[in-house]
Image (cartoon, rainbow, N blue to C red; front, side, top):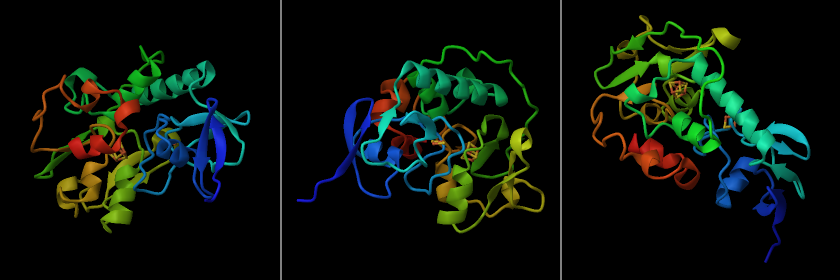
Amino acid sequence: MTERSTFRLDGKPIPFTPGQTIMDAALAAGEYIPHLCHNPDFAPHGSCRVCVVRANGRDVSACTAPAALDMNVESETEDIRALRVAILQMLFVEGNHVCPACEKSGACQLQAVAYHCGMLEPHFKHFFPHRAVDASHRDAILDYNRCILCELCVRASRDHDGKRVFSISGRGIGSRLIVDSQSGQLGDSRFAITDKAAHVCPVGAILPRLGGFRVPIGERLYDREPISRVGDVAAHQEG
Ligand code: SF4
Ligand code: FES
């Protein structure tokens, strides 16, 4: 039997194989580290920073940092939780996230991770950006108000669907999601509801038209179980 290397996550030994990230190894061991732009089906992206952990005293993204022998990783400490809450608060105020009126409420990972991290209020001033809702597609609505620029739809469309329907334009605060069609509208693009990209959005920015409110709010995935217990993949399947 080969002996596996381990690191410690909040004091618990976590086995890993060479090449695994802290996130991969933690999730494989059944330990939850909050995340939004990470999805095991795609290459890590490291953009949301919600998965911040302290590894040997240095703050890193768990989804991109490789696991290392005897590394000491802190995740659920007061400091790291406070850092995560601030990152989540920024994500909330940068967009227009009106949870009580959102069809994704209860199956939204941003909302579920905020609950997990104990975020109780937005703290920062809301930007209230003017963003459009693209209802041009027969089968899906693209609501830019809720986009957190995680690039999961970009990666899914490019790497899985082979279409490159979505991309990010601009930099920093000027970054925005764009659609590859002459009009810039989803309905004029090659997007199809059967695409992987139609089912990876962790928030309610890409919403299939059919099936809305099929599961009533209050009975959805994260209404029933915290995200730390059920993870994110089931949310994609449900949404
Ligand atoms: Fe991420 Fe959804 Fe925005 Fe695409 S539409 S970048 S999946 S939040
Ligand atoms: Fe690691 Fe987004 S989940 S940076």
